[in-house]
Amino acid sequence: MRNFDENTITDAVLDRVGGAQDPRIKQVSEALVRHLHAFLREVRPTQAEWELGIGFLTRTGHMCDDKRQEFILLSDTLGASMLVDAINNSAGLGETDSTVLGPFYVEGPNVFENGADISNGMDGMPFYVSGTVANIEDRPLGGAVVDVWHADDHGYYDVQNFEEHGLAGRARLHTDAEGRFSFWTIRPASYPIPHDGPVGDMLKAQGRHPYRPAHVHFMIEAEGCQKLVTHVFAAGDEYLDSDAVFGVKDSIIQPFEEHAPGRAPDGSLRDAPFATLEYDFRLLPADRAAQAA
Amino acid sequence: MRNFDENTITDAVLDRVGGAQDPRIKQVSEALVRHLHAFLREVRPTQAEWELGIGFLTRTGHMCDDKRQEFILLSDTLGASMLVDAINNSAGLGETDSTVLGPFYVEGPNVFENGADISNGMDGMPFYVSGTVANIEDRPLGGAVVDVWHADDHGYYDVQNFEEHGLAGRARLHTDAEGRFSFWTIRPASYPIPHDGPVGDMLKAQGRHPYRPAHVHFMIEAEGCQKLVTHVFAAGDEYLDSDAVFGVKDSIIQPFEEHAPGRAPDGSLRDAPFATLEYDFRLLPADRAAQAA
Image 1 (tube, chains in turn blue, purple):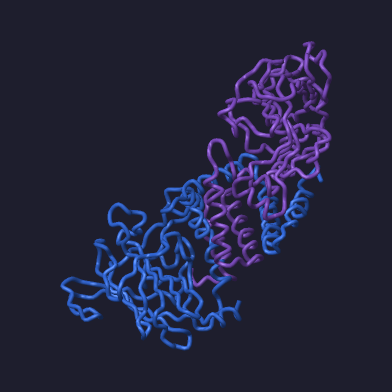
Image 2 (cartoon, helix red, strand yellow):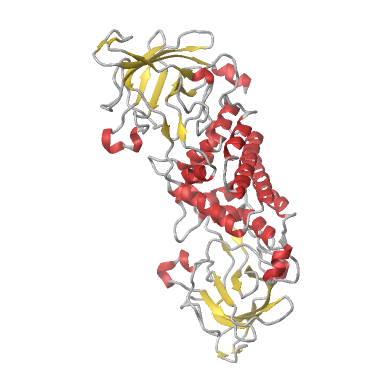
C-alpha cells in the first residue's frame, strides 16, 4: 500500500487500524480516523495551519500538571464534556440531573463530620449547605459518600491558590441514617475558568467570555446506585445563560439565600449575615441505569 | 441557553463559537465542533473512556520537548499529516511528489559545501547522495536551499542520540549554477518511529508495527517556486508497503546502490564498499501552485 492521495488515504488508514484485537479499540480508532479526516477534508488546512494546530495541542499538554488540566478545559469549552455527560446520564427517571465534572476535582478529599466548617479560613459570607440523598423512590440513602468542592468568593479554587489556604472548600461527607448531610463554608462566586493558557486564547479568538455562574460541585455515591456528578448553581447569577462550559440546567439551580444575623438552620446563632443552600439529591438505582443505557 | 441534552448541545456550542471575528477561525471552530461531536455521538464513550482519552492527550503533550514531537507522530500515524500534505500538494504538473515532514526536522541546520561529509563520524556504509534541482520545465535552479536529514544505520536520528555525535546526518546545502548538489554521509536504515510513548501504545493496541522504510528527507526551497518537502526511499526496503506513517509513493523510491571499493561518482577513490543515491527534483513555480490550489 502506497501512493496515497486525498481520496485513498482514509481507507488505507482504516485498513491499518482495523487490525486492532480489541473490538472497542477497533471501533473507536476507525471512528476517530473517519471523523478526523472528514474534518481535515472540510477545512483543508494549509501546512502552516496544521502546524498551528499541532502547536496548540502541544501547549495544551504542557499546561497540564497536578493542579491544572487544560485538556479537560478544552473538552469542557467545546461542549464535549457535556455531550459525554448527556450520553451517559439521561435516563430521565426522576434522578437529579448531572453536569460536567470539571478540572478541579481532587481524589480522596479530607473527611468532615456533618455540620463542620470546611472553609479552612477562606474569607467570604458564611454559607450553610444542607440537603438529603435518596433514591428515585424517595428512600433515604444513609452512608452515602458526598464529595463537595467549590470556588472561593473571588472565584478561585484552593488548588489554584494553594499557598494561601491549602485545601479549602473541599470535603468528603457521609449522609446520616436519614440521608442528610450539611456543612458550613463560604459562598462561592461566579468566576472565569483559567484562561491564561491555550484554551483562554481559543475562547478569545472565538469571541467568548470564560465565565461560569457560581456553583457548588457534588459527587455522590451510594451503594447500589449510579454515581451522580453534578453542581448546584446560584439562582439569579448573571452567567446562567452563558456558562463557558454549557453545564447549566434549570433543575439544578437553587437560591443561595442571604439572611440577616440570627439563627441559622442548624440552630447556631450567627452575628453576621450568612447564606444558605438546600438541595435534595435523587440517585438512580444501578439496575435502572443499566436498563436505560 | 441552558438545559442542553445530547440533541441540543451541538447547536448551542456552534452558536457560541460562531461569534469569532476572524472568518477562518469561525469556519475551523464550527467544523471542529461538528466533527468532534459526531465522533462522540457515534462511539458514545463512557465517562471512564473519555477520561482515558483526556489522559492520552495529556501524556502525548507531556512527551513533547525540543527533541521529541509526539503530536506530530500522532498526526503522522493517523494519516492526518499525509492527508494535509495531499490537500496542499497535488497539482500533478510534473513536480516531485511530496510527503510528510515528520518530527525530526531541526530549524537552521549547519551549512555544508557540496561534496562535504555531513555524517559527523557516524558509523555505517559511506553513502554518496547527489542530484539536481530544476523547475518543472527542466530549467536548473541554482542557489536553491537543500535541507537534508536522515537516520543513522541503527535507525536513530541525531536528536534522539544527541550525546553520541551531536548534530549528524543533517545539513543545509545550496545548489550550484547547474542546480546540482551532493554530499557524503552514511546509509540510513529503516527504523521504528519512537514508540515508547502514547503513540507507541496506540500502534500496539491497533496491532500495527512502528517501522518506516529507509529514507533521506529533503526540504528544498528556490526563489519563485513552491517549497518541496519530501523523502527519497530506498528501493527494495521491506517496509515500503507498510510505512507506519503512510508516506511512500512510487515516484520517490530510488535504489540506494551498493558498490565495491573503487572510484566514486565524485572521482574520489574509496577503499571500502560504499552506496550511492541520485535523484533529480522538480519544483513547481509558485504561480502554478497558486492556480492549482
